[in-house]
Image (tube, rainbow, N blue to C red; front, side):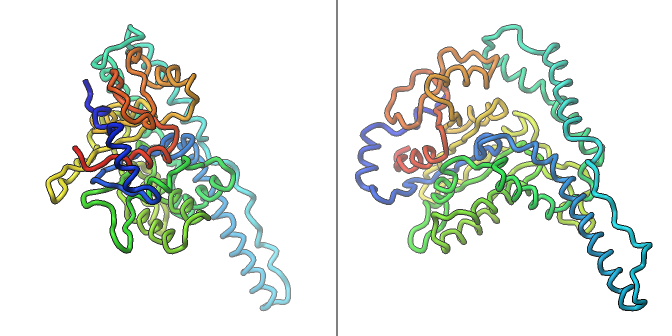
Length: 374
C-alpha cells in the first residue's frame, strides 16, 4: 500500500493546528512541494503556445526591418531632398513552415500506431503492466522532440519572442494559472520576521519544452497581481526568478543571434520525471521535509507514487471524478482507488494512492494544516 495518504493529518491534529494558527496560518513543518506545470499550475496545456513563438520572431524581425527602412528614407530625404524609391518594405511574414499542427499530427500518428502494438490487453492493468506501458512511450516522445529540433522550427527565436507569446496568452486567456497559485507560492517566501521552516522548498518539474516560458509566465502573472502589497509582490518576483524549474529548453534563447533551433533536455517521459524527482535535504533538527507532489496526468504517475503526499489535480465536479480519474490513468485498474478530496481531513485510508484537489488554494490550505508530527 502506498504511504501517501497515511501522511494526511488526523482530525484532532487539524483542529489543534487551525485553532492555534487561525487568522494567518503558515507552514508548520518543512515541506518540499513539487508542482507539475501543464494542467497543474496552469488550467490548460500550454504546449501549443510554443508553436506561436516563431511567429513572434517573424513579426519582431519584420518590425525591425520597417524601422531600418524608415531611418533610411529619412536619411535619403535629408541628403537628397527625395526618398530613395529602391527602399521597399518587406511583406508581412507568412506562417512559418512547417506548421505546429504538422508536428501535432505526426505525434498522434506515431502514438496511435504505438498504442495499437503495445497497449495492455486488459482495460484493468496492474500497476506493473501500467508502468511498462508508460515506459514504452519513450520513443514516441523522443521522436516527436527530435522532429521539431531537426526541422529548425525554433531557429532564431529568442527570449523576447517567448515574452511576447506569454503576454499575449495572458491577455487573451489562452494561458491561465490555476486558482490559488499565488497562495501556494506565498507559503515558501521569506518574511521580515520568521520565514518558512528550514528545509522548505517549492520547485517545478515538467516535460514542457521551455523552462524559460514557464518562468516568464509565472513572472508576468505575478507582476499583474492586484491583491498583494507591492513589497510582497517584489519578494514573489525575486522568488520566481531564482526558483528551481526542471524542464526542457529551446537552446540559445539568450544568444544575440537567437536560438539554434535545437531542443535540449531529457525530461519527456514518466521515467524521466521520476529520475528528476528531488531528494529533500534533511531538516537541521533531523526532521525530513515532507515531499508533496501535485500533478494531473499519467506522466506524473511515478512521481505521485514516490511522494510522501500525492495530490492529483482535478477541477471536475464530484460526480465526474471517478470517470476523469479512470480516463487520466487508463488502462490502470483504479476501481478501488478513486482519490478523495484533501479537504476531507481525517478520512481513513481506503485504498486510494493519492488525494485530489480542485485548485492550488486547496493545496495551500492543506499544507498549512500539516503539523510537526511525522
